[in-house]
Structure formats: C-alpha cells, structure tokens
Image (tube, rainbow, N blue to C red; front, side, top):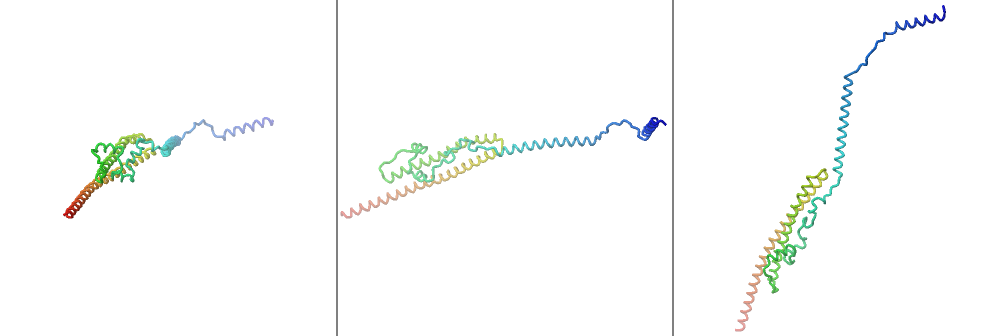
Length: 241
C-alpha cells in the first residue's frame, strides 16, 4: 500500500477514533454564586462603615487632645478682678492697732467719714482730750475700712458676669476647668473677705467697749483727783486753824 495512503488511513482512523472517544462538546454559560457574592458585598459595606467610624473616633480623639493641650489664660479672665484692692482690701494686720486705736490719722475713705463726723477737737493737751481725738480717729478708720471692703465686694459682683460669659463661650475641657478654677478662687477671696469683715466687727465692738472703759476710768480718775484735792484742802484748813 502506498505509504502515503497508509498514512492517510492511519491519520483518518485516529481522527475518527478521537471523535468517537472524545465527549461531545457543548456551549456552557458562566455560573454565578449569588449567596457568596451577597456575603462579599455585605462584608465590604461593613468594612467601609468600620473605617468611617474609626476615622470619626480618631477625629474626636484629636479634638479631645487639643482640648487638653490648648493653654488657657486664667489671668486674662475677668481682668477687672485682678486687682489687689479687690482681692484683699483690708489693711495689713500690723497697721490695725494704730487704725482701730485711733493713733493713726484717717486717710482715704476714712478721712471722708472723719470730716462728716467731726465737730470739735480739743487742743488743751490733756489726756482726756487726746483720748477723745483718738476715739474720733478710730471710728472714722473703722468706717473707712468697712466702706473699702464693701466697694471691693460690689466691684467683684460687677465683674462676675464676665466669668459667666467666658464659661458660656468655652469650647474645650481645659477652658471649662480653668474657668471653674477661677470661680473657685474668687469664692475663696469672698470667703476671706467675709472672715475679715467678721474680724473687723469684733475689733469695732471691742473698740466701743474700750471707749466705755476709758470713760469709766476717766470718771474714777476725776473722782480720785477731786477727793485728793478735797482732802488736801481740808488738811490745809485744819493746819491753818
């Protein structure tokens, strides 16, 4: 047989055999797993939401740190209160003896009260006259101290709304804490002034008692001197007789 023909037969047989053995090819469409796809979409959506929540939390945390780190000028709040005459209007303790005792001449507000109260100042140089003048000074000084304290309290009351405005305008935790601290400090000043006013009241009461005691002592001294003068005069009369 012609080799060429044999080759053709062999090839043809092989082709036919392959066609018989090989499964019949048919056209197929892509299969989609809808359940798995829906799960993947839901997982992706949840991941997006989680990322957005994380971003919001980080932003809030950043704002919180800014609230804690932003400095607050406490001294700049209600600047009108940053005044020694308001925070502590009382004279120094070592000056109180002269003021309440009357050895210190009235000045400032006390001088105004002295001029209102004053009628006459004896100048004969006697102890009684000196004490009378000192008592007049003491009364005016006490009135002046009380008046100065009252003015300080009124000034503080006028400036307190400024702190209230600062508190309403606060935008951070540190600002709120700082303002609350400032309010607490002002409260301490007020309590200190209340204690000072009570002490001043005690001093004024004791000064009034001291004046009464002085009058009694003066009366006894006058009686003693009068009795001594009478005794001396009587003794002189007896000697003359």
